[in-house]
Length: 110
Image 1: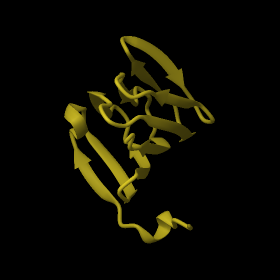
Image 2: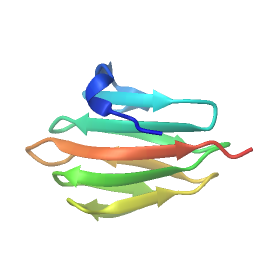
Image 3: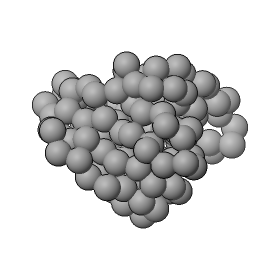
């Protein structure tokens, strides 16, 4: 199945999951997965949240930032990939002067 993110409208979400500033996202969803192409502007974040019933994989396409995973910070840059298993908590933070662009996959666990 082809998913063309060029054909998906972008949404701007303020303070996503309690985070800072704006999260821009193109999102594909079905009953099993959420697949996102996201951008965090400089100084923006996705708030700390726990994955209950799903997990999340985040692959950094462009920029620098950090992920707070279960209380530990991990530095991120282009090509980095993080995994937040079900039952664990994380937050994505763009603490740089540029945009942080990424793909994220959230599979539901049944």
